[in-house]
Length: 406
Image (cartoon, rainbow, N blue to C red):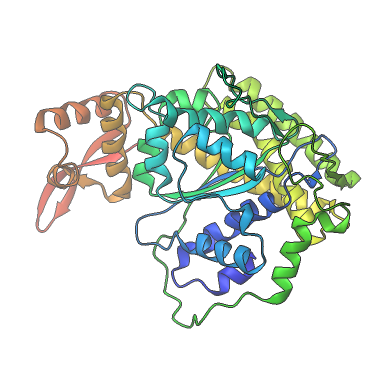
């Protein structure tokens, strides 16, 4: 699916989310059908980040089209999640489901704002956090008064929720606070920033038509590789449904690779104790094993096996983006408005590079700040050693410029 989508890209950013978007799509199709030896499942939360107009919708369009053509549209959730109860209702209807959410940063801003957002909105993020760890067991629904028997608790057996969101950097990082990092809600997401927002356009793209082999492959994944028996096997959500996922074996060298990763991460967690990045570090091994599982099933739905190539790729992929997420949290996530302004102004100076940026250029790039606030932030950054001043020739005259130190 990733190769098919990449051939049809008109704007190069879509190359980034096609792969991760495909991983989420395959993860939803194989939900409740496959598991690792440790009972991990294929439920993934992924966010692709790029500027506006960079083609973030391409992956969603491809996934929607091939799911409908393959007769698998029942695995697609709506474009928006209106409430926590709505999310659970969709999962009760289809326990293995993919939600593709545009403007995910705006959605997250509302769902993470416990002071101003109504409870039915904040419950979405709460439910997503709980569902992430409930994929291998039973998610127990909420209890209501149920005086007339019409509002009974609705449990979901082995739910597989996959979420693929796209957003801009400003909306995404602006929606988060330090609490979202510490409580682990951010750590459950694979955050994938674009390396190139506006590459050369591909003008050779024509009418899209999914290859029949791709459609058959997706159908085989959704059918559990042909191993599941019975028309209703794993189709319903309640506790009485029979859900018996295939256990995907792991080769000895792949198992050794994950063991080495565990030892490495344990050392890093001990060194980072008391910091916000521990929640992100703690999820690296789990997310890597999920990706390796999806890759193994995507290669051979009938006889999947996690080998060293799948293990190496998954571990390198997750570690790379986890490191970048930790760095981005330090640079962008703020708990107060003052801290947010400080980090945003520092980012403006950082983006100017070694050449530096003049005071007038800083002013033009930070029009949202009052002059007094801007000056106080610049003084704070200088005193803290985050930025320094210097001189630069500008059109025949020398001007003071600001540069970042770290």
